Structure formats: C-alpha cells, structure tokens
Image (cartoon, rainbow, N blue to C red; front, side, top):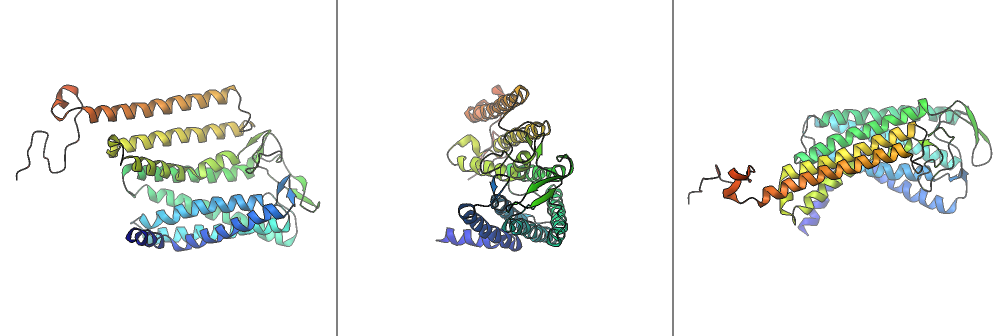
Length: 348
C-alpha cells in the first residue's frame, strides 16, 4: 500500500502541463482508433484517422517521458518548467490541427490549398513545429549540465534527447528536400488538393506499409524520424532492464559495467539510426535493403555484440578474482564500504 502511494506521489510530481497534453493525446488515440474501425474514408489508400492515431501515440510516449524527466533536473527549474509548457501547448496545437484535418477528410502535411481555414492552420502548424523543435533542443542542451541518477541513466538521457532532436530536425528536411514540386492529390471526397513536399524519396507518397504507412517502393524519411524521436525511451528502458537484472546478476551491480553496457546499446542504436537515414536519402525502401545496407547492418550487429561480450567478460573476470589475488591478476576488486584499502581492517 505504501509502495502504491509512493508511486502515485511520484506521478503527481511530474510536469503537469505535459501530463495534461498526454491525457488529451490519450483521448485522441481512443477517438482515432474508433474512427479507424468505423470511418471508411481514405487518403492515399490509408484511413484518414491513421495519422492522428500515430501522432497521438507518439506524443503520449514522448510527452510522458519529458513529464517524468523535467522535475528531476534541479538547475534552472523555472526555465525547464517553461520549456515543458511550451512543448505541451505547441504539441496540443499541432496534433489538434492534424486531427481536425483528418475529420475534414483532407491533408494536414504539405497542403497548400488556398481556403482560409487551411491557410491559417498551416501557419499555426508550421510555427508549432518550430516550438516543438526549439523546446526539445534547449532541453537537450540543459541536460548536458545535469546528472540524473547514475552515469548510465544520465548518458542515456543526454544522448537519447539529442537523437530525438535530430529526428525532429529530419521533419524540416522532409518538407524542404523530399518533394519534387507541387502536385495534385485527391482528398477523402475526391476533391483536388495541392501538395508541396512529400515523405518519400525517389517515389511519391502512397504504397505504404500497414500501420506505419512507410513506403515499400522508395526511401522514406519517416523511418529515421521515428527511430530518432523515440531513442530516449529505448535507452531508458535498457537502463531500467540492466538495473532490474542487477538484483539477480551480481556483476551487473557495478555502476561501471551498467554504464558500459548502456553505452553499447547507445552506439548500436545510433548506428541503426544513421543507416536508416542513409538508406532513405538514397531512395531505398526500409523493406528492400541492398547489399550495402545489409553489410552496414551486419557490421553494426557484429561490432555491438563484440563490445557487449568484451564488457561482460571483463565484468565477470573482475568478479571472479579472489580478494587477495588482484595484484597477480592485474584486476583489482571493488572494496567494501568502510574499507580504506585492500589490506585494511575495520576496527570494532
């Protein structure tokens, strides 16, 4: 009971505006899920509710992560609270516009139609993207001057939010570089819509995978955008898993070992992110990798596995060395709390 009360108190301490945003996005996820099942309108062979559903789920995950993180940053607390509030407000405005456009049966992204609602909405929408990116970038910079928990968690948060910001920056690249020029598409009612920009590279939008709608015939910058955006959750989950396993695996109780293994996860995931960016800008679909992509993936897997193996082997060797044999082995064991050296004794 006390543990439950402590957990609820912890959640209540999270950044409140961000939690309001998370609650609103959760409602959107439910509404969009119902729409996905009951509304047969489509845009480019995908339900009009697919995009609000994906954005809602993404903002629930990312917003909850920020809401948990920001109160733990002890310096410049007012600034961090303001940045979180900016993210929450702009997130609500941006995803709200996406949901309204879906309900209208038309496009939110790349839509340059001249009707008044769309023109005003696009200005607000574009400004919100800048707000989301700017707030995240400043939080990433501020994290460089904070320590949250042990080194494994601190570095996971720093690199994770940094990759998230880079993933957000890809959204600007999508709009500015991916499109061949204005083109006309049909909305859910068959009316013409002028679009400038696209997600695909080397192939027009459409012909997408189930659920994600990522292109199956050409490059798609939404792939690295997604991978980068949610890197922070992957890294934090990896640290939490290592910490949980430390209760059962003695050599994981070392902070140094957990930090090394977290670093291996970070390196491997960052390499995967880089490969998907490289794959997308070459106009290559995620599901149709060529020999060069397969080679890069294989090298990433081998190097990541080798680094993890080396870290684990060193940790197990260190644990296996008896206390009196560290000079001959060259591996010095960790000293117990209260000891001033390997040969010292604790007075009664």
